[in-house]
View 1: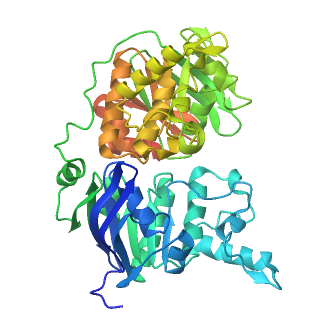
View 2 (view 1 turned 60 degrees about the vertical axis):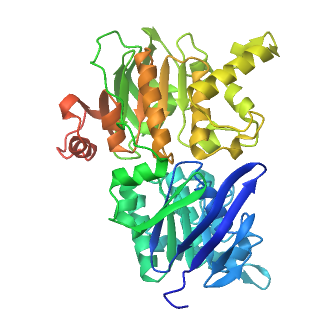
View 3 (view 1 turned 120 degrees about the vertical axis):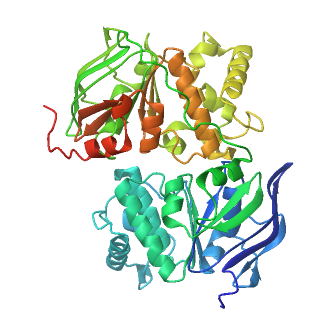
Length: 506
């Protein structure tokens, strides 16, 4: 193949779903030896684009060429055979199988007609070593791994297919900062080997650090393609959303004194939480900072009643609260809600209607005895759709048909329908486009202004600084520092997260 011929080219490609146009007359190409960013809001057509390129969907109109030759993939297996491999945002791993079994699930090495387990393990070890993940045991069950580790297994699985075009759909959004750096190094290595990588991310700093070429999609159309450095970040965002952006974070009001609605003292769980102390007053947004894996997620799960064996004292509104289950936490007089880390596996029932997902936590509020009051239920659903500006076809559609941003809004709306007093947010804007992020930021501040107490864990330092009134840095299962006001800077968060003073909380 000559350098003048793109590795993959789409000519006049459109894709329709009933009366909905997902892609419209798209002309797009990617070349070998490049890392090519695909940018756009949720619903811009990015997912449909990569599904066509990877053989999941056929185009309704137009054609695709690979190495200058027209192709028509009828399945992902055909695309893989042609060298195009996609790592989707939704993991394709089987939880009850081992890491090695998952990596080679569709092409295990065989000997005498049987799966050669020893050779499979050896190859899995080699692939994991290539992405600097020797700590992952090939014999471990996938369900025993953290979300970040599962994502790295997914990447190893894709790498084992020897891709010439590698598509990553928000593949770094679930990763720890350490694993993100490993993916960066892998993509640069693949670029040097003339692989074409398509990189979909809503994190502009990742695009700036990694990509050579950027393409913007909006409302199902390819808007423009340009080299990195040719547009400012403001210009890129304006092109993505088709309008000027407002200030990213809403203004913070002056801090109000008041009795805490949530007070946590000496919270402990196994070796992950080692005496966490925290208070949140009505109207406050408190951030949880620190490097990923220091106990932040376990802290939120403990408050929501997910973990067993938690010790310490928790009070809600001055009354002792023992969170024995999520039902108890959300059904308390002063209620607690949790927006979880992984919306697709922990927050939604993807194969059920949007209506059922919205009502999942609030049936008691829209029922008369054992029967649902249809009028009250539909009014509550309509109110949630309006308040959060959730874009749906009909509420009878399955939740899996929604874009990532609208899925996240459904998860949030589900819990807001119980009118919680304390709202726990675990990285709520992960994998969400810039426009939807701003909507969630404004929603958080309006909820705080209405007197809600909010605890936000985010891996985005700018988000912690822009959204939170105070940020508690957690290191090795303890709060070691609290930052607010002018002291709340990225440098201060990073320094405290690394515990550079060498001191630890007592």
